[in-house]
Length: 490
Ligand SMILES: N[C@@H](CCOP(=O)(O)O)C(=O)O
Image (tube, rainbow, N blue to C red):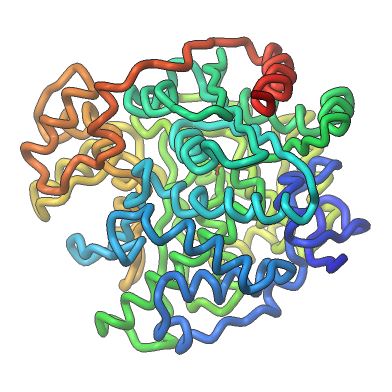
């Protein structure tokens, strides 16, 4: 078996990319990484000549080399031929002097679609080789859940269970998940916040009893969160695509550095950009943009990651996160692939809720990463300003990235992670208009914003609620057992 991936916390076991995607997380709790990432160098001239799908193939074939070219082509075609409402997949829009990369043109109107239209295909092909079934457990703070449900819906031999924090997602995000159709899907509201759900899902992956039951049924328990390397790899593509589009628009010439501002909670999106940088993308700085839960801003400023603080519910709920899972992968690369160091930080995070990295490592990180955060009032102010000045409507997450991008050298690309229609009430409020009901608010917003309401959102008011279960964190294990029994049988 080819061996490309190891755990961030232990380098004794090396596995193929198909196996890493099927497992999602390592048995010791670490995340899968490629130690030789910086030795894979991509040719920018080739990137700038190729289409989105060709670039996806170029990048995926280097990072997932045990997939054949034919397998990858089949996966990429299935993901990107009909699912996006623009041939560019992730177009750039100039707003003021900042280039906004729109990542919300997929089926569920969030950036997660870029990876979650492709991961189910990659998983299907890997399962075919392994002769197994898979049960996907996904924790969501709002966007990942719907994108994963839509991507994995009715895929043969795969079941999916999604856990979202009860009453802590936007009304539209809730409705997107609660109305989900499909014979292999299950959705639960969990009493707690996203971190409670994500931590419990991680524990369940390591639960011996659950794994024994799963093995007996030839089911692999795996993840559609960005802890799964199969989620991150497709996201690298749009960083190169943004670069290509800036070259095409004569904003830069090949080789010039650019910066990116990325609104993030789980650190997956910005890490995908950093992977691109390690593979040869000229990036001056990544700006890590946070909301009032600014655990990442504090870490990047002080070197101490400390989740011991109040969890704040904001108008950018997808970023309401205090445990940023993918930071673990950055620590792995920034520590010189020191598995023991990463394992010790993660142990301290588990037991004390915090850890501190050495000053020298912080300085290395700060050479490539800057940061900033914006609270709810500040977020609304950006939405209002950009609307009044440029006539463009941003969603709250994108607005946070935009504000942080303002401090970057130009050219800077700011990632637009969701359609403003997903957060219509707060967006309308920001631009001085009122609507109490999110569904009605979409139509109100369309009166002032020319971009059409995405089809998947427009139909929400007419769809029946199919998933009503609200459970405690300690009932999640039982829900997985139920899913193993019900989702794979007629
Ligand atoms: N922001 C996410 C939280 C899960 O993060 P992911 O990186 O694992 O997708 C969401 O919207 O659910």
